[in-house]
Length: 182
Image 1 (cartoon, rainbow, N blue to C red):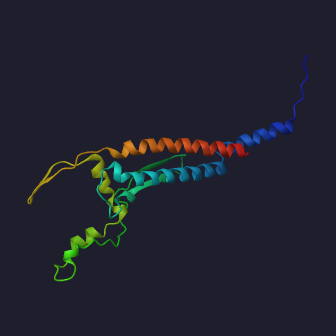
Image 2: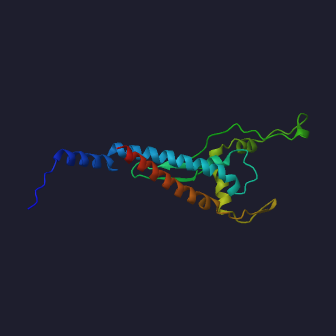
């Protein structure tokens, strides 16, 4: 018969270490959310930088690319990146369009209320532009004539999917580093 001695202190220490590493532990969950937030914000920054090229936008003077938002979930461990809905945004901006050099000074028509309102859309309000570029629009006809359409470019999913995969890899590295510390 084989005799074996069990050191209960070592077993209790290992049990406590495993319980501390569980995601159901509030401290561990808070650390994980913090890591998720850091990783997702890095990927958002990369996505915002790539919006202009991916959506083939010629310019973005009013910052429509800034309408890409992130959210980290409270109830479950996770996050997402998407485009602001215009219903949830709405901070006015002080954007003033550049004046053409030949039109500086002299007589100008007053700027209409609607033009002032449209110019005050902030970057977060301009999520509709990114949505139009992503899914496209149908051909429109108004009393002023044909207004054409925007072809769907489907850039958001093609750009965001690889970035989210990178985020998962980065997060797993951070978790491994955190576990190695203990």
